[in-house]
Image (tube, rainbow, N blue to C red; front, side, top):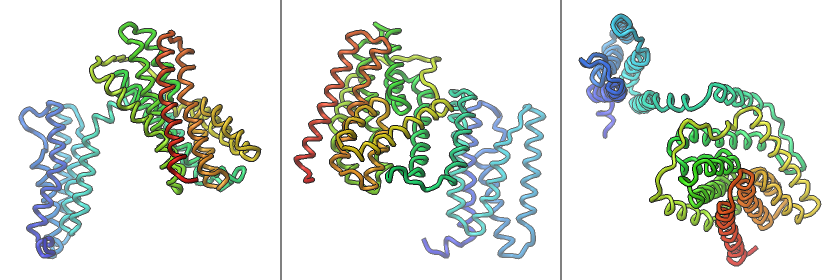
Length: 433
């Protein structure tokens, strides 16, 4: 399309109408969704399109024909229309409709943008505004699934993180652990866990066991295992030991995928370790995904509404506990590397029973500081992951799971670990070290 057409006032007016109509389309759907305005009252696609076209026309006339202050006059006219609309809604419907009024003002401003030649940004901003308006009900649903205390504690921790990050000194602990990287990684992990928690509260409790297993493992795989076992004890025989063990298999599979994500964030400058670790767990992930999918495909959904399944990872107690475990575990493993690599392997297993993420942070820190070889790092990561998978047997037993459930969880645990071991030895054969 030639520059002459793009700069023509006819094209600008058409674009301005489209920009306004995009916002108006969302307002139209919102109006129909609320089942209001049965007589078609209130601004919709055409109204918003014309408001934006008016903004474009006033700016073009002011620039091309020198009509002074026409954009301001048009803006004052829009404000008067918005005022009348607000008064009408308050008087007749006893509601404010502030969102629609603000959207109308923004539509006029975007029309002015188009008239000034900023077509690209006008379209982008229009789509962005429409997206913000359209997620209102989803945001409300998410907020309703959380408690006020959980929201405020999450916001307070986020504010503390933003205040702390700029003043953290670039201290290197034991010549390996970068304190700034530790804080940033901690914030990232807590963010991922909180997103999983929100998803569990919004979806897991209503969508059933599979959704809870996938999403809950993002928050805390051990707590999710405990809760699944408790549900099994309450709901059996409706919830069989077979389905429960497969749900815990999903938890382990999610734990593996989460470990790949966190390792990728930590050691992105060393893609080789990401490739090796991903290859070593690939078979176990494929088995977990395919077996759980085929098993649950024809099974009825087990739903457990109105039940709080997990605690927020961004509560003060949970966040402080996690940060403490992460820091101590990382420091201990890095320190043991000074003594012996064998002690690192032992610590990786013991640490993996409590926090695979903590072991990953320690190994990644040593890799970035050239304190450990790729092969030793890969073995340590696999040992920690195997420990993190194995501890599900212990948590099932703690939660009161019966013998059949423990045996089935143990069988899946053995399969996953054997696949990881076989993949590890295959890597030793295929990759020269």
